Length: 386
Image (cartoon, rainbow, N blue to C red; front, top):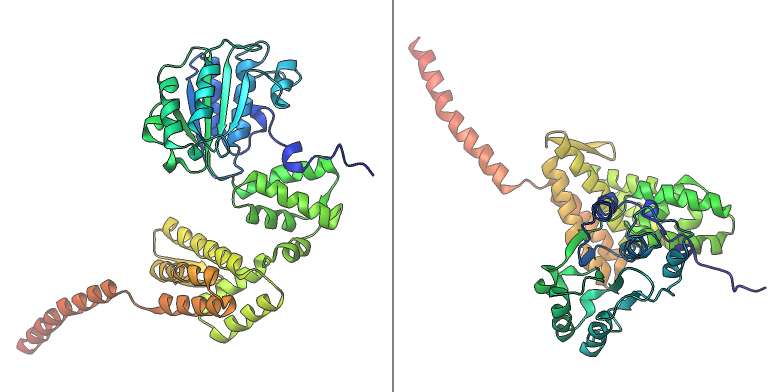
């Protein structure tokens, strides 16, 4: 059977217009306003974690600039110019991989070609992905063009590591920070894909996929694609748990409750169950941290006094110490040779940390008692006089 026409979901469902971009409304709104008001800058920098839409948004922006009646944010996806940008054949939209074209010679070639007028569209648009991979010499070679670019040239840079981009480059770009995409939006997008692809997937399975994606839509789509290959047209939560070694949300909640109650024996038994089932303990530690963090945020939202963790009421101080304990053991679980033992020790230490009293709170309590003693003595003295 021929597979020539097959496209992975992440490519097939890549955003093609501004309305397709999920979870980055602030970026989309600003770009559309810039186009509508004819305030298009000469250089843009998209910053954010992988799979959040940096390169896709850059391509959509290029379509808006070079569509037939452009610049136009509401371009027609069927426009031949737009389609040529989508398939990579447009002469004036040049995509460069910063990782493999990071030398000064490549940038000098770019500077040379940038001088010439556009062949098809209104602008020459250079999209440089992973721009932080450019060498210092390449950045410096690019700087002159960024300072005084020809009016027909637009640069769009994308990076996951903005701290590696020279400040002189940053200062010449309009910067947009793309955020991790909320799990709820990832789930909604996957539901739409599942419907179109005729895949039956349970809500619990979608929640697991979104949890694994860590805010990256591309990661979520790739995981979903792999699950389709594994399961066919029906995907349930146990399938995702087995393939990726995840622990069910109910089990994570039970572990969190056990941490809160300090039931050492039950905790060890639960860890044994997860390990025997081949679950990823590093991922489980991350999921536990997220549950404890949510309880901490809930406590803060309620005035910073206390919150429920797995049905057990704990003070903000206790939750904070528990979270600190979990985070302190992260390195040993990830890099240690005895993963299960290190995981158990980390959880047990976190329990003890949550039950320890902070020295500053003890000092305050003792100081309060010290203030009360003279007052009590004075009251007793007054009683004797009476």
